Length: 483
Image (cartoon, rainbow, N blue to C red; front, side, top):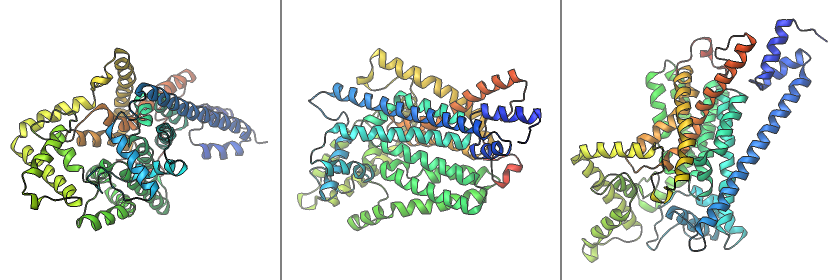
C-alpha cells in the first residue's frame, strides 16, 4: 500500500471531515491513497442522513395535513377557493370531460398542470378523500426538500446541502405549502429543478453537457409554468442580468436561448389548444385581467378581494344590450380584456396611488407576521416570526458573501427578486414569498456552514478561505467568476 506523506494525510482527513465536498473526486483520490473504506463509511453515513431527513420531512408534512384536516372540520373540505377549482378540474380530467370550470364553462381558467397531477386519484376512486390530495402534496413537498439539497450541493457542498435541506424540511411555510392543496406544492420541485439544472449548465465543462442541462432546465421551466402561470417570465427576467452585466454574456445568451426553446416546446400544447379555442395567443390563463384588477383598481389595498372584480364583471355585462352580450369562451375572454384595460387605465391615471400600493404590497409580502385575520393567534404569529426572520437575515449575509462568486449563487437570489417585482403589481401576502424562501435557505445554509467550518479550521490551524464553495468547472474558473 502506498504511504501518504503527513501533509497529504492531513489534507485527506480534512476533506473527509467536510462530508465529501466533491464525492466523485474524493472517491478516486481515496482509492489512489488506499482510503476507500473510510470514504465508503462516510458516504454510507451521508446517505443515511439524507434518508432520515427526507423521511422526517415527509412525516412532518403528513402530520401537518392531518392537523389541517381536523381544523377544517366536516363543514368544509377546502380553506381556499383555488383548491376547490383544482379538485374539480382534476375530476373532469380523470372522467375525460371538457377542461372547463364553473357555471360559465370557462375553458382557460386554470393551468392544467396541477389538475393533471391530481387526476390519477380520481382514476383510483370516483370520489377520493381530499386527504389523498394532501398526501400527494406531502410527497411533492418532500421532493422540494430534495431539490433544495440538490441546488445547495451544486452551489456549495454536501454539508451545506444537508443544512439547507434541513431548513426546508422543517420551515413552517414550506410545510404549509405542501398541505393546502394549492399550486405551490407541485410548482416548487419544478422551480428547484430548473435552477439546479441551470446552475449545472453554467458549470458544465463541455458544450454537450451544457446543452443537455439547459434543455433540462427549459423543460422544468415549462412544467413549473404549467403548475403556476406567474413563472412564465422568470427565465427572460433572470437572463437580463447576466446578458447585460456579465463578461460571459454570449454563453449566458446561448444557454438561455436553449432553455427558452425547451420551455416553449413544453408549453406548446397548451398554447395551441388555447389558440384553437380563443382565436388568439393566450400564453397562460384568462384570469390575468382579474388578478391585475385585484391589485390595481380604486378598491385595491394590496390584499386579495375579488368582490370588486365580480361587481365589475356584472356591471359591464349588464351594460350591454341583451343581443350583444357574449357567452362561453367569448365572455371569458371579454372579461379578461375589460378587466386588464380597466386596471392599466386606472394605473396610468393614478401613479402615486400605484406607488403607495407597491409599498404596501412589499410590506405584506415580506412581513414578519401573517397578514390574514384567520392566522393571528399569538402562537402562530411567533412561529412564523421566529422561523422566518433568522432565515431571512442569514440569507442576506449569504447573498453578500457568495453572490459575487458566480452565477449559481445569483440564481438563488433571483426568485425572491422576481416574485417581489411581480407582487408589488398584483396582490401580495406571505404565501407568495414561500417558494423564494426555499432558495434563500441555500444562501443562509452557506453562511451557517462557512462560519462553522471556519471555526473548525481555525482550531486545526488551516486557512479557511472559500472552503465551502464548489469549484467552477467552466473555462472561466481560471479567473474570477463574473455572474
